[in-house]
Amino acid sequence: MPPASPLWQSSYATNYTRSIAMARRVLTSRWDEMSLERITEMVSRKVIAGARQRLAQVWLKRGALVARHAHDGEQITYVLDGALRYSVDGEDVMVRAGDVLVIPPGAKHQITVLEDALVINALSGPSRPSEL
Image 1 (tube, rainbow, N blue to C red):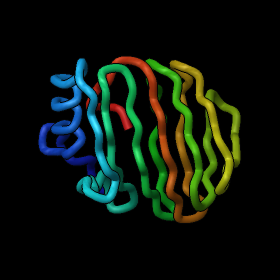
Image 2 (tube, rainbow, N blue to C red):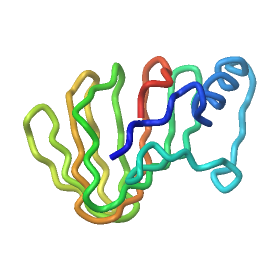
Image 3 (cartoon, rainbow, N blue to C red):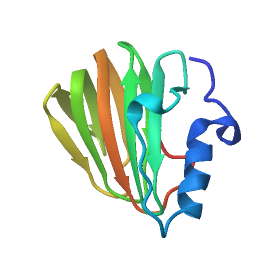
Image 4 (cartoon, rainbow, N blue to C red):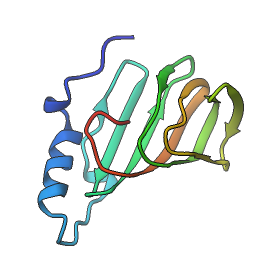
């Protein structure tokens, strides 16, 4: 997989900066009007970032591997389509369309994509451009 795009060139960084600046105002967005950010050949996303939460649509192709990482806040993943295997602090969890996974703050996790997938990720805690 090619390396991730530099965050300062990403639409997420732009949305993140705009969201922080507008933290005291209502922000509305439409998924279908947002540009798709290609992270790798196998992973793309659209992200809405507030001051303390992020919501992302993430498309993952079969065979993709998201490297082990952790977030400062809780992550909730809703699987809209496909099948994935999460390894969370050494425990393997299989999820598929219709499943919701809650990952506690600080839990190290990696993802293996078993079938082309579309997920919605909700992350809490301070927004940082470095988080998926």
